[in-house]
Amino acid sequence: MAQKKKFYAVRCGHKPGVYRTWEECKTQVDGYSNADYKGFSTLKDAEDYLGGGVRKLKPPSAEQVSGRNRAATSMALPGVGQQRASLKRVVIYTDGACTGNPGPGGYGVVLIHGEQRKELFAGFRLTTNNRMEILGCIAGLKGLKEPCEVTIYSDSRYVVNTMTKSWALRWRKHDWKRKDGNGEWKDALNSDLWAQMLDLCDRHWVSFKWVRGHSGNEGNERCDQLARAAAASGRLGIDAAYENPPQKRDSVFGTMTWLQSIER
Image 1 (cartoon, rainbow, N blue to C red):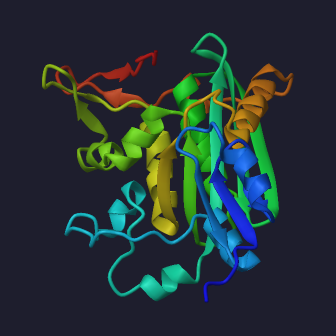
Image 2: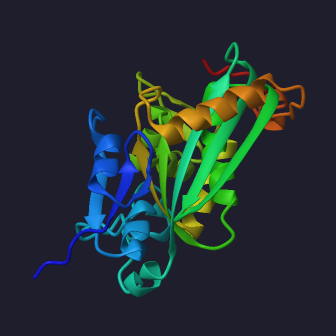
Image 3: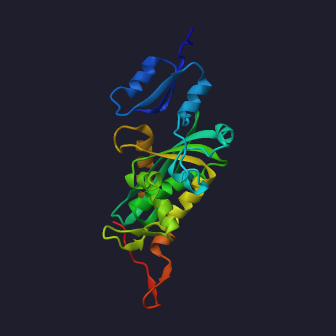
């Protein structure tokens, strides 16, 4: 006889969390596009699902089993499945904001593990929206005190596509160069942050999920509030890598030139 569902975990809905009745759960998922929820007979199972869940995965390809490739996939390496199963499952919502782009900016982060919740935010006097989107993910991962299985929800397709489509891995492989539409090699923007992101993803099991911004998702909406408040605050830090980009030797003339690519 099947056990009666006593707990309902809403991982993606109007207000993510664990609910004790179907009526409460239904309220959070009705009318929400791509809602993610499930019923459980125990509170622990519901919390585990809320924190990321264990999905059925396709066998990893030869490229995906590389330790450097964990950033773009949530698949486990062969032989360490038991180790992964013992990791805490954490959900991270992130968002970035910037006035002027470039201009004053900030990021907001919400970390969720079971019933535990933590918020992070910071503002900078001169930066870009994309840098704040990336830095929000970095801040969230740095906020974890031990290796975890992490699901990051971001409304930035730039962030999600760069990680899930292995763009950052390719840029790093080519010494942070990328090909433009004409097939010419150009400097990859924000390489200082992508390098940090990849290093952090080597420490954790991370999957990136895109969520539509300003669509009523509580986690995303709260991060947006935090990011905007941080950008408008009077305590703004310095995005040193953006304000003072590193010097690079010109390969043709052998002279030192400043990198002055402005992100739009």
